[in-house]
Each structure stands twice: as structure tokens, then as C-alpha cells.
Image 1 (tube, rainbow, N blue to C red):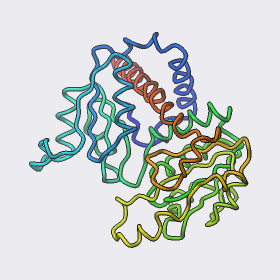
Image 2: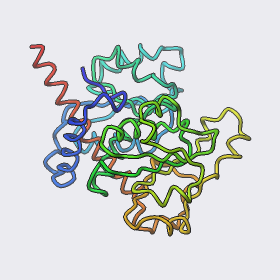
Image 3: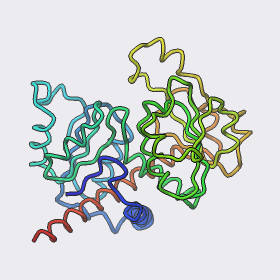
Length: 309
């Protein structure tokens, strides 16, 4: 059984294939309207979500499948003390695919150990967010025309930002990419991510004005209130980096701006009108990337069953 619990679960070749399928869906969507007819996807969202949950649901429905699931556990047996593994075992009996968001790092990996259907990690605490990374890779590929030889500037909450952790793990596998980590000292990129890179593959900075001049891809993130134990620390750091039109004036005309969303104050609304701002297009690409992922996991499942038979 193949799962997607972190981006390294897929090889570079499999990611390339997924990008190709995404592009084909974009241009020939009518050809896929019954591809998952009769199949059921379960969304187990222990944390709130807008883009990830809606894009997965839209993806499955556009492929002809149906969706069951929950957001929040107050109306489920989890509120009675049911364990994660028991919930997954039960839901797997009703579905063909489980998409899980959880507040605990590693929860989807635990789910994958007992599930009899593919499990997709839709974000686990401050750890990983591999389907956002598939979205980001598709966006970069579409908008830049390549996935190598890029200066990638990541800004904001790099300590708890699961999207940037997964993105670095993915993009470091392509040649000649360099990363610039822009954050306050309290929110620096964790060592377990930096240890994946050679010393000459990244720089750590605190000045966005300096970093933006180097960027082919500028990846903004919000400072996440929900990850802070103390409110005063969040209040002190929340507006440390704000991308506005003045900063954009110092960037390359070929740069693109990405953001996993939701944004708070870190990108001024005036930037939305800049043609380099791709974050809303990025959200739309996410639906196509997830359509391709659903199809890919279903194909892998069938192939595995055939191998057993």
C-alpha cells in the first residue's frame, strides 16, 4: 500500500509523472469526470482548513467520486476517547482513500501503519505538508518553467511552518537550487531540515530587503498564532515581515510570489495586483495537483493488488 505522509514518499520520477497528469487534467478535464466514479474519499480534519479541505473535496467530486468526513471531532467518537488508530481502522472500512490533517506531528504516519487504504498527510502539526508541496512544485514548474537552478527565498515562520519544511525537502532534490531562510531568530528553520543541505546550499538572513533581490521564488508565510504557547511572543513577531509594493520594486521582474495561505498581514493587498503575485493561482493549481494525486494513488493501489494476485 502506497501512502503520501511526507514528500520523500514519492520519487522525483513519480513527482514528474504527477505534474504531467496535473497538466493533462488542466487541459482535458472532461476526460477525467468519471475517473473515480463509485469511490469514496474520507477527510479526517482534526484541525481547521479551507484550501486543503475544499481543494481535496473539489478534486474528488470533479473526478466523479464522493466524500465523507469531519472537521473537528466534537460530533465523533474521538470525543468519547476513541484512539486515532481505531478511528482510522473504522473509516478505512468505509472509504477508498483517507486524507488526514492532525495537530500532532507524525499522526498520519501512525494512521498509515493500520490503514487498509492509502493515507494522505494534509498537514501534521508543525511537521510536514506534502500535498501543499505538490501544489508548490506544480506552481513553480508552470510559472518558472523549471524546478532547478532557482534561488528560493522562504520568509516568516520557518520553525513551525510545515509547508516550508516539505518544500525544502522536495526542492533540495533538484540540482543547483539555493535557499535563503529569512526569519527572526526565534523562528529559524529547524536543524533537521538544514541538515539535509550542504552548507553552500542555504543562507540564513533576517533582512527581507536584502534577500528579495536574490529571489526567483519568494515564498511568504504567516506567523502562526496557534503554534505559540505565549500570546505576547506572537504579538511581538507577527508583523516582522510585510511584503508591500515598495519591497516588490527591488525584486526581479521574473520573480514569483507564493504563499500557502491564509495570509494575515504579511502580504499587503496592493501586491495582489502585481503580475508576479501567484498565490491565488497557486491555490487553484492545488486542486489539479490533488486530482492527480488521487488518481496516482488509486493507480498504485490497483498495481499493488495485481502484483499480489
